[in-house]
Length: 356
Image 1 (tube, rainbow, N blue to C red):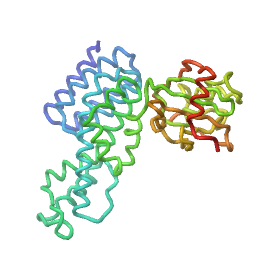
Image 2: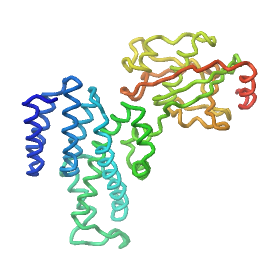
Image 3: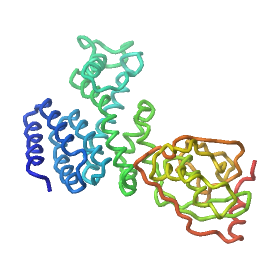
Image 4: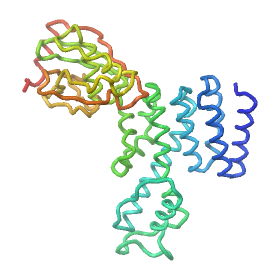
């Protein structure tokens, strides 16, 4: 339940949206943020529900700014559920406009795609390139210039996609259920794929949508021949996976125990351990014998008869990294479900490529 002052400020936001008064809307939004930045969960949740009712009333640019504040509230602990659908809708619109912007840009100019930016001058400049003076044709007469209003819409989508993406990456980090839901939405998948090459600044989106949750994993420790059935979730990359495996397998296989600060950095502590860089305890390989890149994703571990199989070798050299997890808000899970019997471990070991 919101107090009277916050309720009034929300009413002011709705009135500014109705009047299409962007400066008043942004000023009121900033005031609300300053009043509620450190609010407890019930107030933050109630406020977010009211804010989410505004998205359908706003033009895309203001919606993108609202999504940034709403994402920050989720980052501070508000329930992300009300934000999911409006953010996905706004993000898809912005990404689809971005993909069309890139196609139209290449049709009319040989210049590099502009750096995305929210400044009006950047958007206007890009729109003028797409529309051209006096409706002139595109380069070599092959590309058709766009009406200025359409060009402006596409340029704005190109500019604001980063804001929508920031909110989306926040809600994706906060919930495995949300990741599962969004990874199955075909419009979102198509929009992300259409812009992945042209928008490397949005790299978090495809990676978070590919995060595995509640995923079985067979882990073979080649030096001992032992094997383990595990379940993983919320792990952003193989750096993080390697740390968590060393932690879980401590006592099961011979290894130098990872420092507690490394484990904390890979789970829910400061992402940069105070004790210095994290040191690899294993080389990671897939069942075909290929080395897994440390910056790669667990989702890229190939399947062997429907199972992801990971092989652990002794480290071939000293490999270190400084960040325990790429996504600070995403909490990983890794459980050792069972130690495989010797016969089952030998069966799996016989099916993977020999060691280096």
